Length: 181
Image 1 (cartoon, helix red, strand yellow):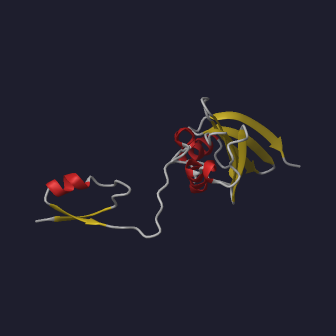
Image 2 (cartoon, rainbow, N blue to C red):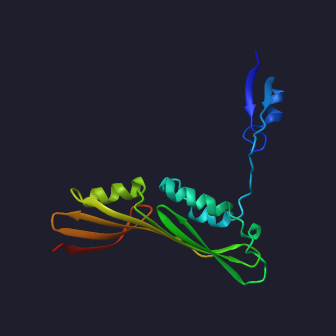
């Protein structure tokens, strides 16, 4: 009996040569209007991407990963650096590129994004009965340095609020309490 495998050869999702050796029927699919672009900024992406972060953050970071400033009309290889502002509904990113189009640094700020499960669980455990009022997520990437990823959360309960800084593992780095007048 033959097994049917639909392979996307462009993406290399299956080992088609091995499939043919195993008595498997292979159907090649051509995708219309499909353009595969290499990841231009892989060092950045490997440092900042967290599959537990919100979809809004992941989409913007994936876009930056594939962005190639050398393909834009403004790139002339004559400036030392190029700054690009990426805007989305949930945040802004300022990225700086060198004269060769390499991503040097990236400062990201996202508002009202859902923190990952580790962060939420740590906050709920330490602050039971408190409500999440606002969130922001900041990422600072600099080439050849450790990346900084911090969630800033504001909790409210009765006439009090707490501002927190929490890392991606759920460790609370800073707490500041305020009375609401």
